[in-house]
Structures are given as structure tokens and as C-alpha cells.
Image (tube, rainbow, N blue to C red; front, side, top):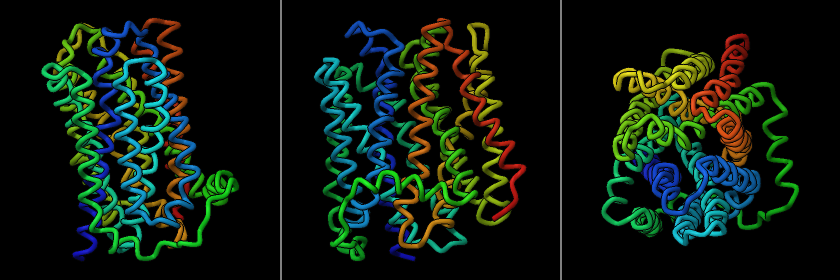
Length: 391
């Protein structure tokens, strides 16, 4: 139990630091756009590029996790994210491209690595709860990034906020080092990377219907989450909210995901089939996204907060229950690679979602239409999960 708690805490903190690094470009986007004179639709392009390189990293990371161990690859993920953030502070378009490539790839491999680590330590019955607690690091990071990113940026500039986050990631890498002797003992030193790892990662999650369904859910959910993370703050500033206020509204809504993830994991462990929990989350995503898409200047702050909170409790809260189901269905020695396959499908959603949103924004000038359109995949997944039999 002691090792399980250590694995859980280290995985939670890793997810928190990675999440802060991922959300800062979106939270600081209004400052960056104002300074650089970029078109707001380029935010979607930036996160689309991030998703491209995240997809490549996740599809190819399985062999590296098996060879070097999940703890070492967790450290690599944090270092890549830090370097990617530092690239962004150059301010040039090529620097933002490098940030998307390196930082996106680093952030993407953090979840498969920690899934491999936590999967081998968690009893099957407790896995939904353990994975959900681990994944609360994501909304915790979004909350901290949304609340403190603009505040630090007002004092140190947006570059100062990015530098501070990168330094924190590097510091945590050193704190993780003593744990490697404990958690990487079963690494396979003879395992090598092969180009065939890319298609094999996808084949691993397409062979069975249950994993295909989870992959579809990952695609829909991650796409909607990326749209909210990328555009919610800018959406609110377009309605007249100051950047700091919009950041606090975003972080307050995301805070709902912290107890939400634990609640869904608790229900999935002890009371309700994880499939039913996922179906409910899918339908909640669809309904709340439509509500967010209807925002206008006549909406009260309370109404905006409620709609955003429901979206956070669904679109930001599915990870633990979905990844625990993935771990349950995966071979015991391949939780990391199979999780990478399911998450690769999610990265496709994270790529397509912001690009579709950016295209709709450019065509219509409306921030709301994109939320409504991007809700459709979650609606279809919810219906499919309700119709599917348990496995």
C-alpha cells in the first residue's frame, strides 16, 4: 500500500506540472496575440500542431517506456515540456512551432508512462478510483495555470510566467530521481524502438470492440476538452471580460473537475459499471457544450459559471475512468503501450477539434458555433455506450 501511495502521489504531481505547462499558452494567448499581432484563429492552429506531435510521440513511446521504465520516461516528458515552453518565449513564429513540437510531444507521453506505473501497482477493484485520483492532477494544473498564469504575467510579463512554469518542471524531475530504483526495476533493457511500433500501437486498440469503443470515446472527449482549453478564455474576453477575470472563471470551472474525477472513479469502482459512467459523461459533454455555445453578453455570471462547471465535470473529468478501463482490458505487461494507443486516438480528436473550431471561427466570426459542432461526437459516443453490452 505504501508503494501504491508513493506511485499515486508522484503520478499526480507529474500530471499537475504537465497540465500547467499545457494550459499556459491558451491562458496567456490574449497577451501574446496583443504583443505579436497574431490572428486569434492561430491559437487553434498552435494546439492543432501540438496534437500532431503529441500523436506521433504517443504512437511511438511504447518501446521507450518498456526499455527505460515509466519513471525515467516521466522525467523525459517533463524535460521536453520545459524545453518546449522555453522555445515559445522567443516570440517568433518558428519558436512557437518548436514549442508545439517539443512541448506537445513531452506532454503527450506523460499519461502512458504514469499509467504503466500506476497500473502495475493498483488492485483491479481500486483501479478506477486510483486512476481518477491520479488524473485530478490535470484539472489541478489547469486551475493553477488559469488562476496564477495571468497574475504572474501581469507582474513578470507572459514570458516570466512561462519561465517560472518551466523551472518548476525541471525541479520536479530531480525530486523524482530517487524513485527510479523502485519503479523502473522491471524495465526491458533489450527492447528497441522500431518503425513498426507506430501501426502496432493502433492495431493493439482496434482488435477488440471494447478497446475500439474506448478509443472512440477518447477521440470525442479529448477533442472537446482541447477546444475548451484552447478557446474558453478568449471566448470570455470576446464577451467583454478582462483577461484576469476570464482566467479566474476558467480556473473556477475547472476546479469542479477535481472532485468530479474522484466521484466518477468512486462510482465506477464500487457502484456503477464504468461503461455507464462513461456514457453519462459523454451525454453531459454534449449538453454542456451546446449551452456554452449559446453564451452571449446577456448571460449572467452565475449562468456562465454553471454551464462551464457542468462542462468541466464532464469534458475535464473522464480520464481516470477511461484509462482504468483501458488498463483492465490491456495485457498486464503492456498497459503503457495500450494506453498510448487509446490516447493516440484522443490526440486525433485533440488535433481535429481545435482545427474545426478555428475554421468555423474564421468562417463565421462566432465563438459559440464551434462548441455546438464539436459536441456531436460526444453525443454519438454516449448513445453507443448505452447500447453496448458489458465486457
